[in-house]
Picture 1 (cartoon, rainbow, N blue to C red):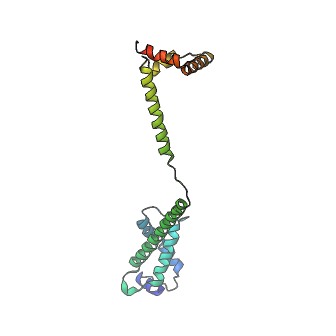
Picture 2: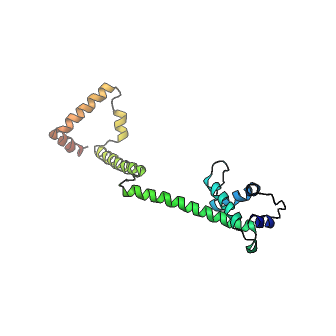
Picture 3: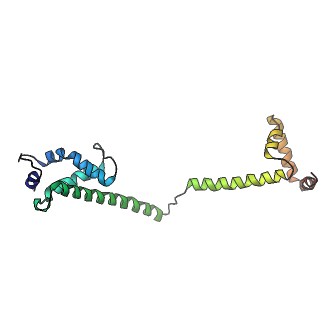
Length: 180
C-alpha cells in the first residue's frame, strides 16, 4: 500500500516511512480538516487533528492506485472520519442532555424569569402612577417634596402607614380627592 502511495506521489525514495509522509503532507491534512470543520485547526491541542491524522494513515493503508490519485482519496477519507467524529460528539452531548432532563433537571431561563419580574414591577409602577395622579400629583412631585432628612422621612413613612391602616381616614382622603 505504501509503495502505491509513493508511486502516485512521485516519491523515488523507497525508504520513506509513514511518519515522513504524514510530516510532509501536514499542510494538506490540516487544510482537509479545515474544509470540513470550517475553522482553523490547531496543531498543539485539537481532537480533529488527531482524527485527521488517523484518516490519513488509513488512506495510506487502503489506497489502491488503480482507483485514482492518492491525495484525492486521502481527502475523502479524512473528511469522512472528521464528519463521523463530529456526529459522534454531537450525539454524545445530545444524549447526556436528555438523560439530565429524564432525571428531572429543570432548565431555568433566568433572563425570562427576570423579564417576567420586570413586567410585574412595571405594571405595579404604572398602577401607582395612576393612583397618585388621581390625587393631582406625579412621582416626580413626590420625590421633589419628600423630606430630605432621614429621621423626618422615616416619621413621614410611619405616619402614612398608620393612616393607611385607618379605613375612615383613607376613605376621607379618597372622597376629598374628587374635589381637587
